[in-house]
Length: 180
Image: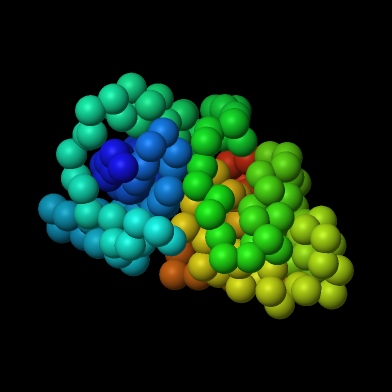
């Protein structure tokens, strides 16, 4: 299996990480400001079936795809309307419900949001809002599976270690008027 892990930089956002295996994105860490000369990732990339993902060099044949995805991400964070829904991603989850959550989220248009309960219903399990929230909390495909588009019934809701300010900034970037 050809695995490639690269970092990329986005002006005004910081440095992100992207992991690609066999022509699919398997991990994406959102850009975060550098700490000193290095970026401190919030987690060690892992993937079901791959385990820890540590390859740091472009695998043969992966360069073009990785470069295209990095260019899409940089354009996205620059505020351009790019389509990330068509980028192949690894949706190898443990349960069919989690796979349906990912598929439902990829269909939520830029600038729109759903609640955790609505996500659960879209994934075919009305009443499973807590499970939908757990899915979002552990997602490893940020932006490609846009969990920032899921809000709580009481308001914006959390966004893990990035915080609500980051979530608000992503939603504002996408044109969601209520994010401010």
